[in-house]
Image 1 (tube, one colour):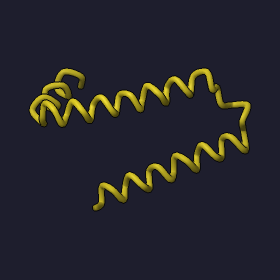
Image 2 (tube, rainbow, N blue to C red):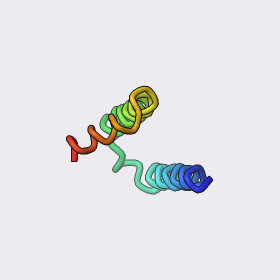
Image 3 (cartoon, rainbow, N blue to C red):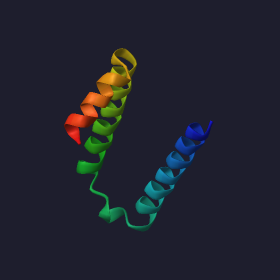
Length: 68
């Protein structure tokens, strides 16, 4: 339950940050970079979650050891 609560709090803070940037300093948001970065982040999370479900924790542990 704590993990779910943390995700909701994180989403809320991200939406609040986006709202503040778009209302206070909209000229500082480079949408040509922000939108592809957001889409790549979503795709990476989706693929990573699917890979974790299919291959298990041992595979993810190995990937983390290689990446880090």
